[in-house]
Structure formats: structure tokens, C-alpha cells
Length: 119
Picture 1 (spheres, one colour):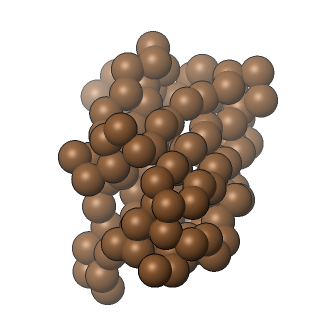
Picture 2: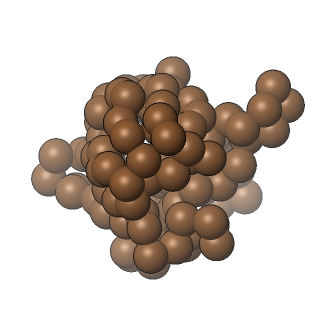
């Protein structure tokens, strides 16, 4: 089990920046993949960025070159630095953790944090 708590959301003008944080209740070095997703509609949650325990990152095309995901193992925290924000980045952002042990995969979600970008 792992609890995830997001913070850092808010209201920002287009072109501005925000940094989201996701604090985990256990050592993130034991978590295979952590990431950020955003709810873009009632039924759709899309990938924003992920980072593996070895530091390999992956980004949605829409955020490449604007967003950066990073992890601080000492603080058990994953960050999402969001620059050059656009109104279409407005969404509820969720932190995600995936733990794989042998053939079992467990997925955890935080409660999310709202990001609103005004034009």
C-alpha cells in the first residue's frame, strides 16, 4: 500500500508556470513507475508524464518541451514542473504509482490537484 498526496495546483495565466508535488507514504525507490495523469473529461484520464525507478521518463506529445517530471528519492516525492502553460492544460491532475512484484501489479492514485490556466 502507498498513499499519494498531491499539492501545488492553482490558477495561473497562460504562459505561466506551476510545480506539482506528489508525496508518497513509502520509499519511492521501491515504486517501479510514478507519474502524472490529468482528467480531461468525465470518462477520460490521460497520461501526462511518467518516470521509472531508474529515471527513464515519458511524456505526452502535448506537454513535451514544456513539462518536466522528476523524483527526489530522499524526500519520497515526485515533481511535475509545468512551464508555458496553456488553457488546454486546465484539468485535475492526479499522481499515480505502479508497483510490480513478480506477476502482480498494483496501481495507486492520489486525490488530485486542480490546475486552471486562464487565457
